[in-house]
Image 1 (cartoon, rainbow, N blue to C red):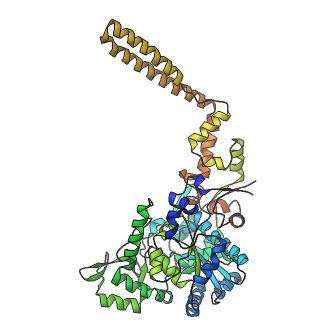
Image 2 (cartoon, rainbow, N blue to C red; image 1 turned 30 degrees about the vertical axis):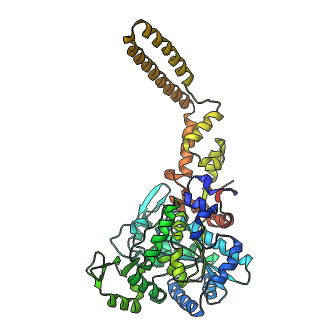
Length: 520
C-alpha cells in the first residue's frame, strides 16, 4: 500500500476556518483550549477533573448498555473496567446512527480515535486511554441517517417511526438486507437480532472495532442524565448557553468566520417515546412545540430534578453533556463539528468544565488497484487528481503535445484590418462606418465558431482518453465530492477485507495531513 500525505488546504475540499485552524491562525486561538499535539495532553490530563463517583456511574451504565451484546470482546470489557481507575481517560468521537455506517467518514472518525489512544498510551504510559464512540441516539433527523450508497446504488430505510432514532425498532431493515447484492454478516447479525437501532449500531461497532477496544456509549440513560440536571435548570431559567454562544458567534463573524450552528433561547428538547420536540418559553409557560404539553416553571424544574432523562440537549449542549459524563481529553470531529465547537468555549468556562482538545478527524482517498492503474496510464499522480477536471484535461492535452487551440492572434489581425477599413470608410462616406462594424462583428463571430469547431475536432482525437479521465474523477470524487462523504464502508471492504486495518496503519491523527492510500 502506497501512502501519500497532502496539506488539507491543497485539496480544496475544506473550509477556510478549518485550514486557518490547522495553520494555527492567531485569530482563532481564543476559541479553543489547546491545539492538538502529543505534548499538550500533559496539561489536559491535569486539568480534567472526574471523580470516582462519576466513574462508578459511567461504568454501571456501560455494563447495562453492553448487556445487549451477546459476547463482549475482552479488550472492550477491559477498557470498560479501566474507566473505574483514576488514571484512565477517554478520547471521544461522535456520530449519528447511520444505517450500515453511512458515509465512510463514520469509520474514519473512529479510527482516528483509536490511533490517538495508541499514540497517547506510548507517550504517557502511566495512564490508560480508551477510544469512545458517542452514539447520537437522541438525534431525531431520520432523513440524515436512513440511506446509504453501495456500488453506485442508493438504499433507503422506510419507516413511519418518529422521535429519537436510537429508540426506533429495527423493523423494516430486514427488507433492506434482502435487497443487498450479497450477505454481509456484520449487518445481518446486527439488524436481524437487535431490538432497537441503538442496540444494532452498538453491535456493528463492536463487530468492526472491538479488537481495538472501542467503547460505544448511549447518553440516553436516566442515571447518566442526572449529571445534566444543573445545566437543564440554568438553561430553563437563565438561557445561559444562548447568551454565551451568541456572543461567541458574533465575535467569529467579526473575524470573517461563519458560525456553524445557531443557538436557541432554550437549547433543550422534551424527550419521550416517539417524541423529541423543542421546549420554548411562551406566555409565562414552558411549552413543547407541536404538542399540547406545557409546564409552569415550578413544574418543569421539578421534572428536571426527578426525570432529567426526559430532557435532551441539542447541538449546543450535547458537547457539554459528553464532557460531564466522560473522563474525556479530546474530541475528534469533522470540519463542521470542529467549527461549531469553537462557538462553545464560553459555555464550558461558565460551567467550569475542561474544554477538550479539538482534533480534526483523519480524511482519506482510497485508490484501488484498478483505479491506480488507470491513473498511472494517464500519467497522473494522486495529488493531481484533486485538480478540476478541465485543468486535468488541459494538462493531458499538453502531455499529448496538443497546444490549446486559440484564434486570438487571427482575431487581432482581423481587428487591425477592419480598423484600416474603418479609416477608409470615414474618409469616403462616414455612413459606411456602421456597415464596417457589422462586418467586423460577423468576422469575429465566424472566428469564434471556427475556434470551437477546431477544439472539438482536436478533442475528438483523444475522446477516449478524456472519457477515461472523467470516469476516474467520478470514481475518486463521486458526485464531485470526497469519497468519504458519499461512499459506504462496504464499497471497499467487500473487495478488501483488510480495509480497516489498512486505515489504522495509515492514519496519523497528529500529522494533520490528508491521507491517500493507493493499492500497489
